[in-house]
Image (cartoon, rainbow, N blue to C red; front, side, top):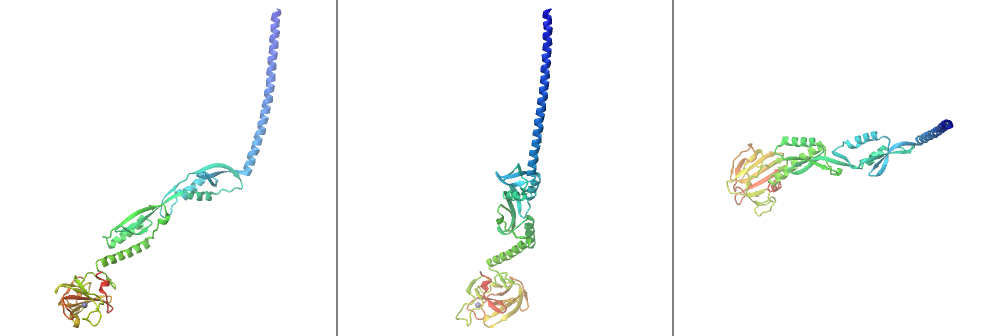
Length: 345
Ligand SMILES: [Zn+2]
């Protein structure tokens, strides 16, 4: 009986102590929770203050670095990328072929003093320095030799086509050139290049004609030589046989060799003329006349139109002559000139 009682007492006591513990725990928990909440409140408020102070004093920006070196701040990465796209990647200027950004910019979010200004344009300029630009232009070649350069293929083609309209035998080529040195780009506008090339063609023609021994006399094209033979007396040479200096070019050839008129014209004289013997004079216009003297036979008469290369007389030795030869004269405004300045180069 006693035992049972004691057990009851014990269990009661135990119950009571458990309750106590629970009670104390509850109380403590309440206390700690309150403390923790209090602490948090203070922290949040403090943090809020700090953030507020930060945002009053500072602002977030992106610091941009190129190859590890900070070049400036930008406000908005997306908007800046748009600027880069417009000003750098799609950089479209005369002769620009390719644009490559050699350095990759790095962006880092940073807090800076509010008074600090972002400098997008400075960053953009720094980026532009890292650009590798390739330029493109077009050379126009004539017989493999560069004669001019233009900016576009269209310009080059237009020039070549217009030149070929006049002479389709011209051997033009268009060569695309690229360089990363802007100073190598020496192009001309369409109009200037056209003029240059036209001048070059005239120059080339003159050289070719001179090489052939044929040239232009006061605007009159000399198409051929009057005879082929040996030069026996040059212009302005002095001889015992003549009173004055020599007014023409003597070309020795066998008697009867055909004499060909050097350019288109009209016969102004065909007959005997003292020391010249039988002479043919041809007027070519532009005050240019050619004379063919000492002939054995004249094949044309005064007033007759002749075309370049036409046989007008035969070589002889009439007049003041020591043997069969052609005395050939060129006169501009009635004055003799050295035929060798125009033919027989
Ligand atoms: Zn002579």
